[in-house]
Image 1 (cartoon, rainbow, N blue to C red):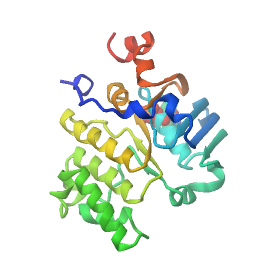
Image 2 (image 1 turned 30 degrees about the horizontal axis):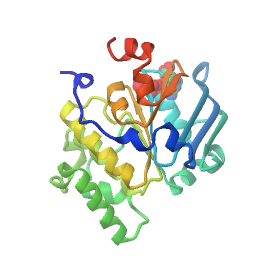
Image 3 (image 1 turned 60 degrees about the vertical axis):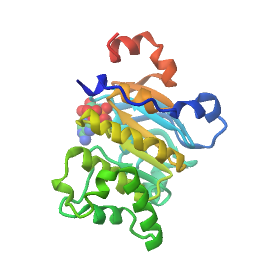
Length: 259
Ligand code: ATP
C-alpha cells in the first residue's frame, strides 16, 4: 500500500478555519509577486501566498515545483524579488536570526538533527535561551505528542528510524515556541503507520495556537490536514483553494488523485 492510498483518520482541521472564518484573522505571512532564481534557473515566479493566524496552509506540488525554495525564501535564506512579509515586516530586512526570534521556526526537509546527541538533548537545544520551567513544559508537550520519543529519551538521534527522526525534528522545532511553524515535506519517505503519527500531531499543534506552513508532495495527506492549499508547478502557483475546492477540480483529480 502506498502512502497515497492510506486512509488517515479524518481531521476536522478544515472546518473552523476555512476560507471564510480565516479571512478575519491577522495575516502571519504574505508574499506578493515573489520570484526567486538560482542563476539562470527561475525557481519561483509571481507567487502570491497568504497565511493567516491559526491556519494550516499547504504548498503542494511535484519534485522541483519550488516548495523548498519557497520555504527557504520566507525563512530568509535566499534572495528574492517581489515581497515577502512576516508579521508585516519584510523578510529580507528582518533576516534569519530576527525571524527565528520572532517565532518563525523552520523544520527543514533534511531534519538537521544532532546525530550523536540523544532525544532529550536535541529537544533541549531547540529550546535554548528559555527558562528551565518552560523547557520542561514544552518537552512534556512533545513527549505527549510523540510517545515514541518519550520511550527513546536517551537514544542517539542517528540510531532512530526515519519516522522517529522526523518526529524529533518536529519536536525540536516546537521547543522554540513557534508562531509560524514551517514543515518542509515532513512525510517524505515515511511508512503509512508513521504518517498517521505525524498527522495526529497536527491538530494539537494547531490548537496550541501555532500557524503551520506544510509543504507536501503527498497531496492526499495535505488535502486531509490543510485549511487552504496552493498547487505549485514549475515555480508558479497554478491552483489555490480549500481542500474541498481542490478535490472538486478536474485537473487536480486527474493529475494528483488518480482520476
Ligand atoms: P522537491 O520536492 O524535490 O524537494 P521542490 O518543490 O521543493 O522539490 P525546489 O527544491 O524548491 O523544489 O526546486 C525548485 C527548482 O529550483 C528546481 O528546478 C531545482 O533544480 C532548482 N534548485 C533548487 N535548489 C537549487 C540550488 N541550490 N541551485 C540551483 N538550482 C536549484
